[in-house]
Image 1 (cartoon, rainbow, N blue to C red):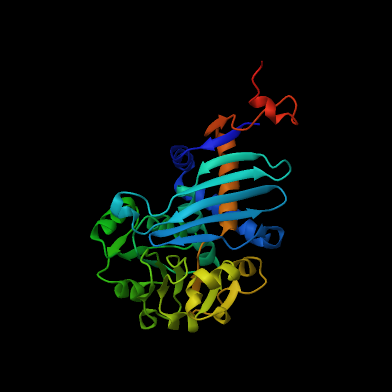
Image 2 (tube, helix red, strand yellow):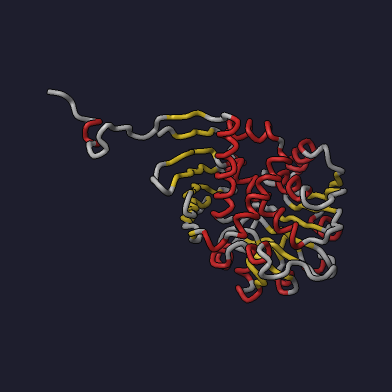
Length: 338
């Protein structure tokens, strides 16, 4: 059985062929479907190995048809060495046989699925008339986040700030289709935003955004805090907001809620999407999506990409595994005739 191999360029080519916005539309829809089917999946919090320079993680998840696993890192210091902070490889396998169907670079897919998760949360938690999108941290995730959120809300202006002027210049080049306003501080972004995204990479329990900067009715997608001891929000924001997480068992260790405890959580995202609990219930309430990234999002991205790659003939079909006339005779692959 051939395995479809998608290199980084193949994934990028597929997204460009379909269109970034249209690709995200499909991924957002796929992720919503997965969240409604939450109880049909087998998933565990990701095992993580931490090092002084970063983290290595493995993220497995399965339903009765497909098993998906992603290997991913997080090394905040990598850009200083000319390397990406996050790179990933994903494998999609068939549950019925155990055979892999696809091996793919999942670096671009990780950014896309993280953005899709923010868009789903925004769809259910932000005010319908939210027109000003703010983002603190214009690194590798920033453009994906803005494009995805703009697919579910009528974004009229993007206000942004980063400590690195070069990161803001890069963001401006990539986001020329939006009305942009460069801010001079995180506070300026927060005070202007209807929807606020925090996407910083710094380690430690930080207060990138303080409670007094956040207006009533703001929705916050907090995506930068994704490891023990790594957070972005003033804990007082969480104490005064409706907080939604992806997967409580993982969020309590890695998310913003590690600073305030799981009792601050209103719901997991699947409960909102499935209608088990209401999302936003007033114009004034502050809502927070405490996102750390979960394996179900990768399952959505890998299955969606696999279907599109087959449809459009993208990638290489590789004979990666043994093909034996006698499946019980594996030794024959290395036997040498006398």
